[in-house]
Image 1 (cartoon, rainbow, N blue to C red):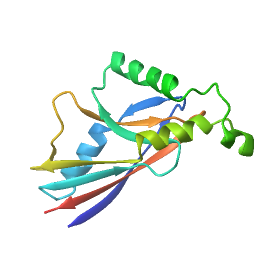
Image 2 (image 1 turned 60 degrees about the horizontal axis):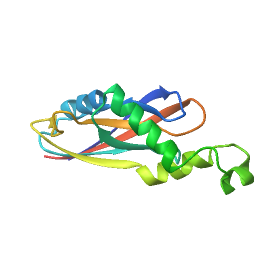
Image 3 (image 1 turned 120 degrees about the vertical axis):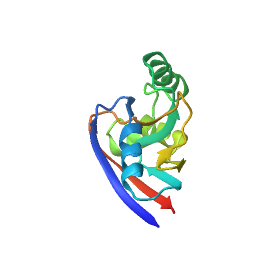
Image 4 (image 1 turned 180 degrees about the vertical axis):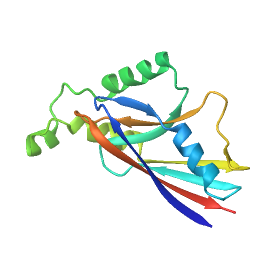
Length: 138
């Protein structure tokens, strides 16, 4: 069986990190599928998804590492072409990735004790974000 669903929310941009674990867990629990996998996918090219321990220190650490790895304060060809100033956002999202697969059993995600699913919005402005969940199993 396959169930596809969507969750939507607002983000603040500028490396806003949003914990979406509870929304994903709710959709899995309500899917009618007992065991399987859920693919978490963010359409677009300026956000990504991953897992972390969602606590304020680590959230800040992750935000800071993106600035060290892919600074917003250097020239990007994308910005020269389009003039929207978010070249760094596209590069960051490409490195993080747009999808994540999480197994579940008994309609519960098999995440670790301190592991949450997050969306990172790298764009340079607030956005309306949509995450597609594809739940597969039996």
